[in-house]
Amino acid sequence: MCRTNPGNWLAIGLFALLIQCAMGLLTVSVVGCRKQGQGQEASAYDAHDFVAISTGWSHSLALKSDGSIVVRGDNRWGMADPPDGNNFVAIAAGTYYSLALKSDGSIVGWGLDSDGETHPPDGNDFVAIATDGTYSLALKSDGSIVNWGNNKFSEARPPKGKDFVAIAADRSHSLVLKSDGSIVGWGRNQFGQADPPGGVTSLLL
Image (tube, rainbow, N blue to C red; front, side, top):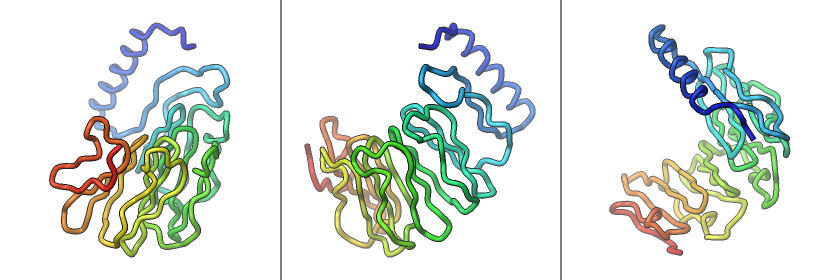
């Protein structure tokens, strides 16, 4: 349990933001404390060359401009041990695992693998990834969607078709953007989260 006074962290965080704004810097900063069993203590990323970020339950990813990945936070299941290399173009963090899209169109995963979430499908034709909770989606170059991992609420059961251009995954529902500008949602829908305006929901739970 973190025993630092929350007010102190707030003051430090606000001061850091003010300094960055005053200097005109765009940086990725993390302020926090290490919990028992965690790998690395949360701290400021010491560079100014990050191009993407993503967060899981207790770990965070950052993609650098050279194509490498930096991870901070909990490492109980290896989610803070990203693969080596400088050929990554996108990142996505799940609850206790992570995914990365490589420049050759393939996907790699690491961390906890309770539902097969770190075993993406083979292939070199992926252009986007999305994950949250314990399931993942990937958009292929032909506009189709593939999925893997937990499927408790059918969140890993995407619609058929090859006219999709963007994907988004939450803990128990998913959305996709179609080439005609419409949105399709599916998965758990107790609050209407899978009912986009003007879209079609393929499965309501």
